[in-house]
Image (cartoon, rainbow over the protein chains, first blue to last red):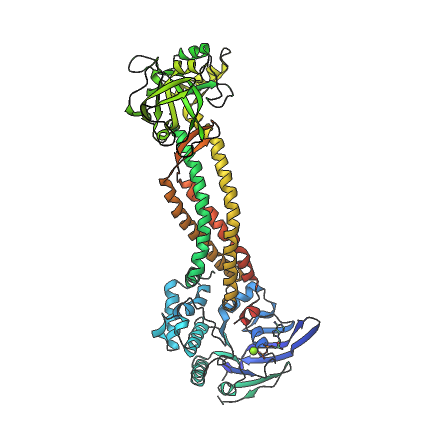
Length: 235
Length: 388
Ligand SMILES: Nc1ncnc2c1ncn2[C@@H]1O[C@H](COP(=O)(O)OP(=O)(O)O)[C@@H](O)[C@H]1O
Ligand SMILES: [Mg+2]
C-alpha cells in the first residue's frame, strides 16, 4: 500500500523532562519514530512510562523541551499557542479515558461542538454531527444528555465528536480504561472499523493487551525509551 | 470562534439553586440602588412640575431660594410695570407679589414639629399656577386671617383640617379651603393673603414676584433688563429652572447616598458572584481542558465564563428592577434641604434609572466573574485535563 508508506507523523529527537522541586524527572529521551498514514498504532508500557506525555505532545496540547514533531508537513513544535489551537481544531480528534463530554450539552450538541471552530453554517453543523452520530449508531439518542447514556455510549459520542471534523490523526488515551469488557470491545471494533474503512490514522495509548491486539503496530515505551515497531495483524 | 452561548446559559440552569441565590443577592443591591435613584428622580420631577415654563420668578440676586430672598416694595412695583407681562381675561396683568415664610407644625404621627412653607398670595397667584385646584371649602379672602392648605399636608400634620385653626405669627388662621396641586411642591404649602401675612410676620418686603410672559420667547430680554437695571438688585429665572435648582442639592445628596450605600452592599454581592464563579471554574476544570484541546482559544474560555457571570448580573438587574418598580406606588415625605420645608413626592422610575441599574448590576457580574474567568483561561490544557 502506497498510502501507508507515507509518514504522516514524524517525530525527531523528542525529549521532555518534568522538574518537580529540586529534581528532574526525564520522561521522554530522544524519541524518534514515524507513524504512517492509515496506521493504527498502540503505545504500550507500564504506568508512568510517559505514554500520555508522548501522546499529548503529538496532539499539540503540551510542549516538548527539544526535538521536532512534523504532522502532515506542519512543524507543530514551532507553532505559537494560537496556531496550535487552530491546528488542533482542524487536524486532531481526541478520545479520552473519561469521555470528557460536556454534561450540559446533548449528544448532538457535543458532536457539533468542534464544528463551531469551522466556518460551517448552523444547518451544515447539525447535518455533519447527525452523520457522525449515525456512524457510531447513536442517531436515535442524539437529544440525550451524557448523564442519560451508559459509559460505552458516551465513548461512542466522544468518537463521533473526534471524527466529525475529519481530522488528520485520531489520538486516544486509554479509550477503554473506564469501560466494561463488552463496551470496550465495542469501542475497539469501532476504532478498528474507522481505521480500516476510512483509513483514519490512529494513535492509541493503552496498557490493555486486548486493546493493543486491534492495532496494526505496537510500540513499547519504557523508561523514556521507545521500542522498535512490532507489526501485527497483517494488512 | 466562541464557545456557544447555550453552554454558559445551561450551566447556570444546571446549578439553579446557586444561580438563584447569587441573582437574589445582586437583585437586593440593585433594588436599593434603583430605589434611591427613583427617590432622587421623584423629588426632581415633583419640583420641576411645580414650575411652568412661561412663568418668570424674580428674587433677590444670589439668594437662590424664595425663603432667603427679599424684594422691596419699590422694586416690586418696577417689575409690575414691565410691558412684557401678559394680560389676563379680566384685563389685569398676570403678576403676583408673594411672600414665603417657614412655620413649624407638629407631625401627625410623631408629634415632632416640621417646617412648612406658608405663602402669601395675591389674586393672580392661583391662576398663574394652573396645577393648583381647590377641592374643598373656598379660597381665602383678602383682608382676613384665612388660609387654604395643600392636600398632602392634611394627612401628615396635626390639625391641618378644614375649619380648624392654626396658630402662627401671633394669630389664629382659619383653614377655609384645601387645594390639590398634584405632584408638585405647592401641594405641601399653606396659602394665605400676602398683606395679612406680611403684617402678622412683620415682614416689610416681598419674597418674590411671579409673572407670566405674554410671549415666552421674550424671557432672555426680560432677564437681561432686570439684571442690568441699577435700581434692582434682582434676578429673573424661568419658574421651571428655579424649581430644578431647588431640587439639585437634595437630589445630589440622595444620589451620593444611594451610590455609597450600594457600593458597600455591592461588595457583598460581587463576592457572592465571585465565589459562585470560582466554584464553577473548579468544578469544570476538566471541561475547560477539553474545550481547549478541541481547539477553543484561551479567550473563548474567558468569554464563556465571563458571559456566565454577566448573565448573573443581568438577571440580578432584572429581578432587582422588578422589585424596585413597586416602589412607584409609594409616596414619601421629606425635608427639602434647600428650603428646609416638608415636601411630599413619589418614587419615579425613569429610563435613566433602568440604564444605571443595569450598568451597575452587569458591572457587579463583570467584577465578580473576571478573575475566575481569567483563571479558567490561564490553565494549561494538560493540567486541566488531569482534573477528572
Ligand atoms: N505535570 C506534571 N508534573 C510533574 N510530573 C509529571 C507531570 N505529568 C506527568 N508527570 C510525570 O511524568 C511521568 C510520565 O507520566 P505519563 O505520561 O502520564 O505516564 P503514563 O501515561 O505512561 O502513565 C510520570 O512519572 C508522571 O508522574
Ligand atoms: Mg497515562
